[in-house]
Length: 150
Length: 150
Image 1 (tube, rainbow over the protein chains, first blue to last red):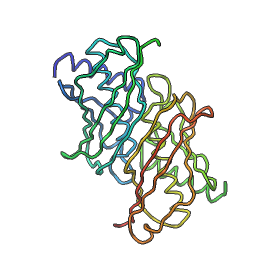
Image 2: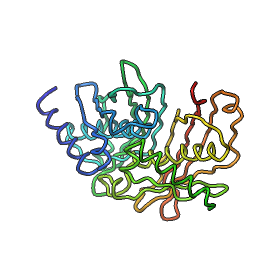
Image 3: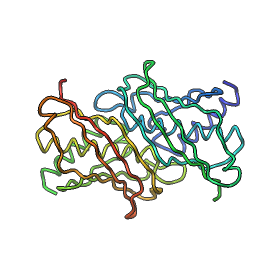
Image 4: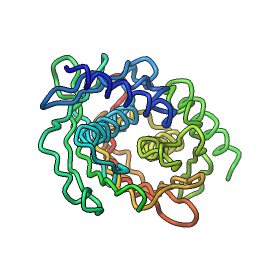
């Protein structure tokens, strides 16, 4: 990971923790941004449920922010501004998450032409939540980035 | 609302806050259980996002727990036990939530025959999140209740 990417991940962590108190409580933290993948994690402890596994709501939030973060990072890397919101989220829970998971999303080939032209840009992202080398949840998110100031 | 229902809502609040730390941080609280509807709320402040509206992840968690709570309450009222988990959640965000929302789910005609027979029982629930007399998010959840001890 480049020094520039590390700086961006620190900025993203601050953005999340300073503006979304739940993300700070959950201790959500970006892990890595490589050319093809962005990954995020959160410890089990603050996100536990009554079955002593990771709470479904926390997994959904982790996936939501992973997709949001991928767009935020690509906007920074492409020097484009936009207010990113989630329009639609669908998560399938496949197996209990019994230890600290990693949420991963592919983040290449993002298209920003509409945003650059002052229009809203849609993104459809798939986030996998992995624990013990197994995909334990699959999330599909439809995000929209809105031109800033519109 | 009957005294028995009020006692159940207090038990549900304790169950959530004692076993799911995120629900306590979010200040999620059952509001009312009538014959046909169960409603839950959470204040904006701990659930704010960078747009100064309610965070998408918090809305998803609020809806997830509202559906979970409806099944938990009906199990209590029908004297049936089961470990409730969410298998699939789909949320559509229709409008920003700018003040304290109410999540509502219909909770009548729950069927527990499979659970009573020692098998898993599926439930498909629709939760609406309402703010300023407007449905701001629609959630569909597929829950499963598993026989206890199996």
